[in-house]
Amino acid sequence: MLKHSIFSLLVSGLLLFSCDTTNTLSTTNTSPVEFVVLQINDVYEIAPLEGGKVGGLARVAGLLRQLEAENPNTIAVLAGDFLSPSFMGTLKLDNGERIAGLQMVEALNAMGLDYATFGNHEFDLKNAELLEKRLDQSEFEYMTTNAYCVDGEQQRPFQQNGVSVPEFSTFTFEQNGATYKLGIVGVVLPFAKPPYVGYKDVEATFAAAVKTARQETDLVIGLTHLSVDGDVALAAAVPGLPLFMGGHEHENLSRYVGQTAITKADANAKTVYIHRFTYYPDSKVTQLFSELVPIDESTPEDPVTAAVVDKWQAKIGDLISQMGYDASAELTTLATPLNGTEAATRTSQTNYGLLTNQAIAKAWPGADVYAFNSGSLRLDDNLSGAVTAYDVLRSFPYGGPVVRMSMKGDQLARLLNTGETTNRGEGGYLQRYQAEKKGDKWIVNGNPLDSTNTYVVVLPEFMAKGFEANLDFLSEYTYDKLEEFTASGETVKNDIRDMVIWYMGGI
Ligand SMILES: [Zn+2]
Image 1: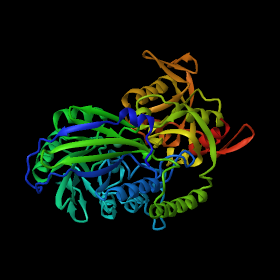
Image 2 (image 1 turned 90 degrees about the vertical axis):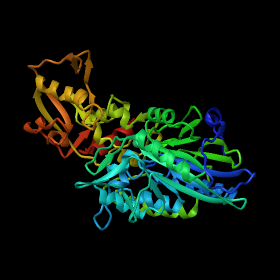
Image 3 (image 1 turned 180 degrees about the vertical axis):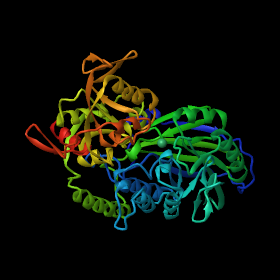
Image 4 (image 1 turned 180 degrees about the horizontal axis):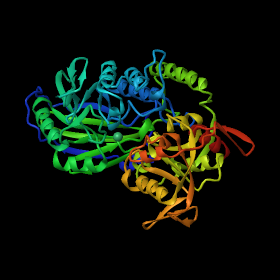
């Protein structure tokens, strides 16, 4: 039996819905038609997290096998954000290529995923060639109404095995001797802006694709990677669909807008949504029961998917131990989750940013200000429960040393203001320690910033070299750099990952 979480009882609902589509594709049949959609979204890790307690694609696959046994008309969908980011994805294979989502594609193939739409993180891949290679390797179908490939002068749909990624996918199934078609329309928020991606208007393209899908299928639903506000606005603008299966937010939620249910599961498959549809062909009424189901130690594993996950885990474990880390080492158990979501770390000071700076300050005390670019924190999730070294590695996949430089107060103000204001929303937004903004003044180490004083600042070498956006002036400064630190009688390598692992092990 499937477990019902208390939260699912609160948010799940029975929805009676009268479909406004007019089509003649289905054979007239008075028997109700039942099908099931399993939804996951924002999945970066193939293996369970929090010390093995939650998530894991082998468990999602195990649940999917159970659902398929109950009703063969079951599909699995992913509402975007999975090829990136992950620590695993940053590592290189024997052939020198970065893994860049291949581990995820292989695990999802084994799981039997049917459909995916792009999330903003799919466009983290360095170019269209690599993204389309991953599409070709996927045994599931992608769809999107609004993202397209910018290929030199040309604008074209992304290609999967030589076929244009469609605006909507069609799941065709048989029941009671008749054939039915479910249309799934994909859309993504225009957030990631690499040179090879362009976007058309979300609402206009979605509305047009829904119109076409309604003509060609029996029932149309959305697979949407939008902010929840974007989902609400789209459901209001394009009414009448029973369901938007969404992503981008990392905590489960459900909303109703008119007749449309909007659902998002927790990131990293800590939960999944199971949508059970009953469709009455004659009246074209759809009944939907959506249930949020936790993925945990009680969820049975699918052995085929588990073998693929284990293969990658072993490969990654080898690479990590070659780097000198013990990935499975448990560092601490968190009473309060650490916020490493991009939405938070690129716009505000978070507790994970503070902890990271405190780790650096403990390793290298004595500076006036500690700061790092939030773009080096790539977790885009919260850390909760038991934290392992692997969790720190996946938080800071690129790692790197910190350096120490001196600068006049007016230049420190320039650094802090650029981080706080100009770079807000970007990876160049700074997580800070001992520098607080009060009104339009900076308080440094307890005192108002004096533009004529000289201050000592510790920051990543990446920033000191002038590589961060709008902070290239930092390259004019000389800096000190140590290979390792001796603190509290221990030696710590000068790498942000080592310092956080060391610090967490002691908290
Ligand atoms: Zn996203």
